[in-house]
Amino acid sequence: MSNYHIKHLEEYYQVYRKSIREPENFWEEVAEEHFLWRKKWDTVLEWDFTKPEIKWFQGAQLNITENCIDRHLATRANKTAILFEPNNPNEAAEHITYQQLSERVNQFANVLKANNVGKGDRVCIYVPMIPELAIATLACARIGAIHSVVFAGFSSTALATRINDSDCKMVITSDGSYRGAKTIDLKGIVDDALESCECVETVLVAKRINSDINMKEGRDKWLQPLLDKASKVCEAETMDAEDQLFILYTSGSTGMPKGMVHTTAGYMVYTAYTFKNAFQYRENDVYWCTADIGWITGHSYIVYGPLANGATTVMFEGVPSYPDFGRFWEIVEKHKINQFYTAPTAIRALAKHGTELVDKYDLSSLKVLGSVGEPINEEAWHWYNDNVGKKKSPIIDTWWQTETGGMMITPIPYVTPTKPTYATLPFIGIQPCLMDENGQELKGNQVEGRLCVKYPWPSIARTIWGNHQRYKETYFSAFENKYFTGDGALRDEVGYYRITGRVDDVIIVSGHNLGTAPIEDAINEHPAVAESAIVGFPHDIKGSALYGYVILKDTGESRNHDNLRKEINQIITEHIGPIAKLDKIQFSEGLPKTRSGKIMRRILRKIASNEMDNLGDVSTLLNPEVVQSIIDNRL
Ligand code: WT7
Image 1 (cartoon, protein in one colour):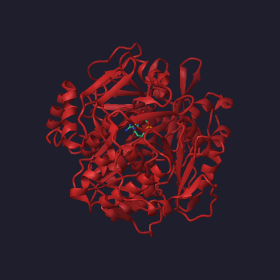
Image 2 (tube, protein in one colour):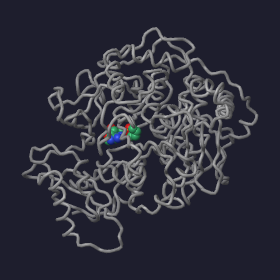
Image 3 (cartoon, helix red, strand yellow):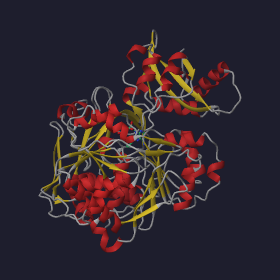
Image 4 (cartoon, protein in one colour):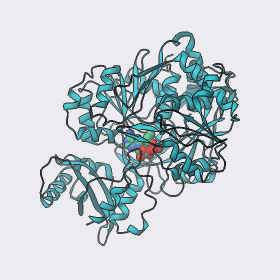
C-alpha cells in the first residue's frame, strides 16, 4: 500500500527515487497490489527505443473492465460510479451506481457481439457527453474491440478520415446532441461521413434529442431496443497485457492525424496510479473533469483512471457558458465537487466575465484544482487560485500528452509546493530530461531545452495505427534513445519544470531563444488584455521578429490602440526584457482555436509571414470564421 498513495514531500522523493532506481520492481509492486489479473506477467518491461518497441507486463492476462467495474461490486455496488449532469440545469442529474454500470456495460457489450463486433475489431464512437459514451467505450473494452472515440464536435470530413484510417466496422452515435442553447444534428454528420466510408457495416444510434432523423435500412439501428433485450451478463474477454485497448487521434504538425495506439495493462496501471495521487482521491470524494471523453484527458481521467479506483466521476454534457458563465460553479456547489480539473482556456473565458458568478456559489467542497492542455499563464493561475480555490486548494498544473496516456509532470497536491506556471516535478516513474540543439543533455538546474523522456513508463503510446515508421520518426528520431515530446521546457533552480510551449513555437530573435508562453503571460498582465498569441515572422536584421495578436476585454469603452501598443511593449520589457518586444501588434476579435481550445499558431504564423495562400486545413477549427477577419486586419 505504501507506494500507492503518496502523502508528503519526503515520501514523494523516496518513492520517486525508488521508481527510478528500480523501475521494474516499482511498477511490479504497484501492479501486484492494486489490480485484478487473470494471469500475472512473465516480464515487467522489455523495451528498445531504437525500434521503437515497448512492452509492459508481457504474459499477463486481464480485462480492464473487470478492474474498473466488477471488482468494485463487492464493496461499492451502490456507490455512484458515473454522475451525469445534463446540459439543461433543470433536467435531473443521473447517478449511475457501479451495479448499474456493470449491467449497462454488459448489455451494451452483448449488443456489440450480436452485431458482429469481436476482439480486435475497430469501433468508432461519435457520441456526445451522455452516459452512453462512457458505457460504449467500456463495452468495447469488455469484449476486446478497439475503440476509437472521435470528439463529437469534429466535422464529417474529419470523422470520415478517422473512420477510414482505422477501418472501423461500426459507428456508435446519437440522434443529436445538446450544446448550450443549441442542438446539433450528429446523425446527419455521420451520414455525410459514411458517404465516403465503405468499411462501416452497422451504425448504432442512441436517442438523446428525439429529433426526426434518417435511418438507413440495414445499416442503422436504434440502440435502446437492442439494449433492452440484451442480457445483463457478459463474460469479459481475456486480454493480453499488450493487446490494443484504443486508438485516439491527435493532430500532427503536418499531414494526417495520428492514430495513437494505447494498450491494456500499462495504460490501466499508470492512469489509475496517477489519478489516485495527482488528485489525492479519497473514497467518498466526488471528482469532476470538465474535458470531453473525445480527448485523452477524458479517456484517462473521466473513464479509466477514476473507475479503476472505484471513484465517483462526473460527466457534464454542457458548456461553461450556459445558461450563464456561472454554470461550472453551480455544478461544483450542487454535487459538492472535491476535485475539479479543467483547461486554462476555460479559466480565461470565465475570468473575462468577472468574479460575481463565482462568488455566488459555495465552493467550499473543493480540495484540488487541476489544469491541463496548455501552459497556464500567470494571470489565469492567480484568478483560479484566488477566486475558485480561495487560496486553499492547490492547483496542479499537469503536463502530459495524448501520446503519454497519463500525467507526466505535475505537482502532487498537499505534497509538492506549487509555483504559478510551473508543472513542477516529474511524476513517479518519469525520467524527463532537457536536450540542447546538438543532442546533448543539459545537466543541472537553471537550464532550458527540448523536453524528452529517457525511460519508458507504462502508458506510453506503443505506435501510430498503421504507421509505425511515422511513430519512430516523430518521437524517437530527434534524439538518440529518447522519447521527444515536441515541447520546450526549463528547469529552475530547485529542479521545477516549466513548459515553455511547443518547440515549433520557439522563436529566435536576434539569436535569443524566446518561448511564446512567457511573452504572452506578460502581455496578459495588462488590465485591458483578455488573451494573446505570439508568433515569429521573418525579419531582415533580427532573423525573426515577433508578431502579437491581442484580444482586448470587452469593457464597452474604446481605447487608443497606439497607446495600448506602447503599454504592452512596456510590460514585456519589464517582464522579459526589450529583446522580447513585439514589432507588430494586431488587435483582433478572436484567435483560431482547435476544438480542444489550443491556439492554432500555425495559421497565425502564416498570416504574420504573409503566406495566406498556404494556410492549410482550417475546417476543423472551433471558429474558422475568425481567420478571415484576422487576414483582413493584418498589419
Ligand atoms: C500538448 C499535448 C494532456 C491532455 C490534453 C492535451 C500541451 C498539455 C500542458 C501543461 C503546458 C501543456 C503541450 C503538450 N500541454 N498540458 N500543463 N502545460 N503545456 O493533449 O492534445 O495531446 O496536447 O499540450 O504542448 O505537448 P494533447
